[in-house]
Length: 215
Image (cartoon, rainbow, N blue to C red; front, top):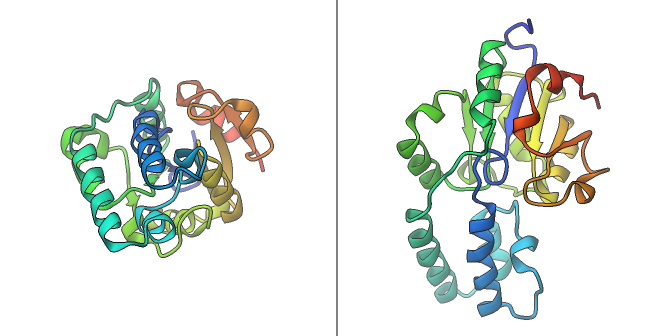
């Protein structure tokens, strides 16, 4: 059995643990068509970015920025957070082996509070959470994963990162972690070469399978 604190697991949230990327694509796709019709696939372009980064880069007008934030708050308040198949089983396996885990998300702390209020048992599987409120640089910068490793007390080169977006994979690879791409949002072919391994979902993961992946 893997000893406690030998390794760590760092998870992106949307598209890896919870099946919400498609829902967000609807919101940001509509925002892109309304405010930036000149940018094709706007929803894909901003995946993995924190809200402050999105607002700074694409909605600098204060009135528009305020409107987008208000619309997003209403949207997220009505959201469900369905877990992908296999998530609880894999998280349970990590806990059984004494491997600490953290959520590393570009989402804000308010969203995480709502998620854990609706799924209180889910929170018990994690030793730390990194949100947009903890970072100054958005993915693809590796800062968030370096902070995540620090929060669980594991060197980043002993951590495994689970990501579904291109920006997230770049972030994980740049951090020095071992990166596993999750082909839920993008096709596996689009993730190949951007991670140390690619799997269809966490349903195919176990601690033994995770530890087989090498940098």
